[in-house]
Amino acid sequence: MSSTSSIERAVVAPRATTARKISVFLSQHARVRLGMLLSAPLAWLALVYIVALAALLVTAFWSVDSFTGQVSTQFTLDNVITVVTGALYQTVTLRTIGVALLVTIVDILIALPIAFFMAKVAGPRLQRILVIAVLMPLWASYLVKAYAWRSVLSQGGIFEWLVRPFGGESPGYGLPATIITLSYLWLPYVILPIYAGLERVPNSLLEASSDLGAKTGRTLRTIVLPMLWPSIIAGSIFSFSLSLGDYITVNIVGGANQLLGNLVYTNVGAANNLPLAAAIALIPIAIMVVYLTAARRTGALENL
Image (cartoon, rainbow, N blue to C red; front, side, top):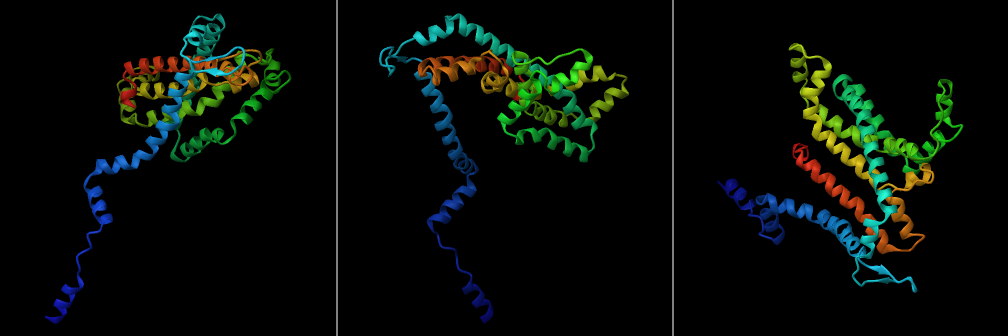
């Protein structure tokens, strides 16, 4: 009896401290706990991205004094009108969209067979090796890869050495070199979403299609591609948006060609015209808004 009473005396109720009350409250309210967990990164995102984007939008409606070179905060539409109606900006915009679309198409065509082999043909060990191989180019510096392609595509470079026996020659520096280089740079970002999408396609569907007499091409068209479409859209968003805003690759392998990113860089640096650069930067933002809206209407984004 004495031992039992001593044990009862040893069990003391925990103190109702403020920390304990908060802990109990958070354990009972999962949404509050999640909100507190996400508040810091969301606040950082709002500060770095949304506020910066708003500042960019505002800056586009300012001007630069032609005499003093100082930025005037007086509201004006001159920069936007210049960008929208100027022949130079229209040409560069069409060129940029064309390059981004070609890079996206090339990457999708290359990524589909690679991702399919990784997800449906390769064994578990080879699959892991291939995933590492796809990710490995991301470990290298962007500039190192771009300058490596500059060396490969130069006159007398490795590319010309490989195609010379077949009567070919290197494309040299220009838009073809830009498309090749950008396609290489963004290819991993297209392979990985498609690979993830293919892993979600049940093998039983492919086997059932084969048992019912469907050939490989029909199986891919009627079963695989409809289920894979959201992943293809996700990969295309990466390659298209990254190509749309790139300017370093064009400077390295693009020759005398310019994209929208080059015009922004030139006006920020050499021309020292930040309002005009901000107005030019609104073009790829508007293009991406249209692109994402079109992608959303396909229903692909909801099925990711």
